[in-house]
Structure formats: structure tokens, C-alpha cells
Image 1: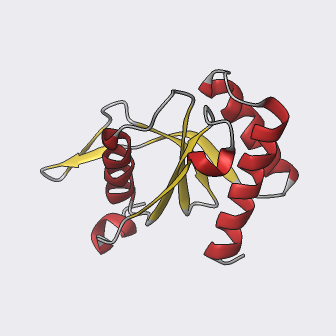
Image 2: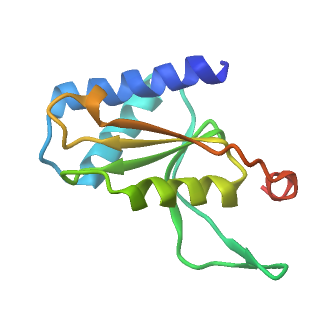
Length: 134
């Protein structure tokens, strides 16, 4: 599956979950249901994936976790709060840089319509050494 098809499947799954549940629940509920929907679509994912930070040549576990990583390609960060802060985008971009991945989505389930809660973030800076370390 190419990246455009995969992102289409992810967005479709998020919309499906939002249609069924609506806004107002905890992020953990949306994550559980979205992962169930991805599984139904036979799309592989990993939840709460550890993201070590490399500092001066040493990998350190600083407690960072990627919400959901889909097909080892796309990072999903789910939000159930009223608004997406600029720092949420910056945080996702930082996750992309340190993971070596290039595409991420902020999925904001608190919106009345899911398509209004989808923010795509792209890492234009691909660090080849970091990507090889995955």
C-alpha cells in the first residue's frame, strides 16, 4: 500500500470512529477504537511506541511515547481537547525528526466533524543516520 492510500485508510478509520462515538470521550477510548478499526482493515500498527532520544551519541529513554505508529511509517497523535495548540504540531514534528519518519497526523476527536480535526504534519528534514538507527 502506498503512502497516499495508507493515509486515506487512516483518515477513513478516524472518521468511522468519530461517527460512531462522537466527541467528548477520553483519548484512550479513541485510541482503542481507532486501533480496532485499523486492525479490521488489516493495517499494522504499534501503540505507545517508545521513542528514545539520542544525546551525544547515547540513546536515552526520556519517557517519550508515540501514540500510534501505523505500518512503521506514519505517527498518529490523538487529541480529545478543545483545540490543537501550536506546541502540539511542534511536538509531533519533533517526534518525526527523532523517529526518522516523515508523516504524522494530529487527530482531534473533540471536533463536531472529524475532517475539521485532522492536521497533517510533514518532516521535510530526513536525517538518514537517524532513520538507519530505527
